[in-house]
Image 1 (cartoon, rainbow, N blue to C red):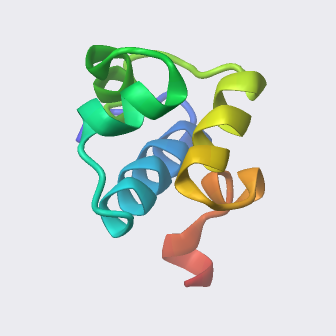
Image 2 (cartoon, rainbow, N blue to C red):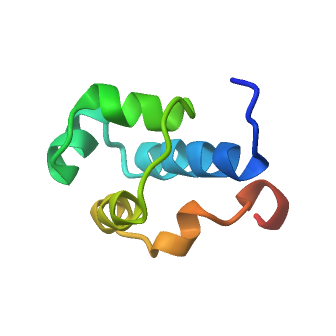
Amino acid sequence: MTDYIFPEVEIVCHNLRKYRRQKKLTQDHLAFLAGCNRTYISALERGRINPTLLTLVILSRELGIDTCYLLINTKRYG
């Protein structure tokens, strides 16, 4: 993974990838559902760009989770 300036960025990247895979969605399919493109989802998962709050809300809705689950350190809390 990349060296992150803020650990919170790594948390969002990790959780987005984790929940997308749990739903058995490809980056392409999640991008389609969220109205963006695959390279955008890829960049989010790698921490190359920072999502807006609206983007997090849209992605979490498409993943069927509350937005807060993208922000919680699941490595620490399970």
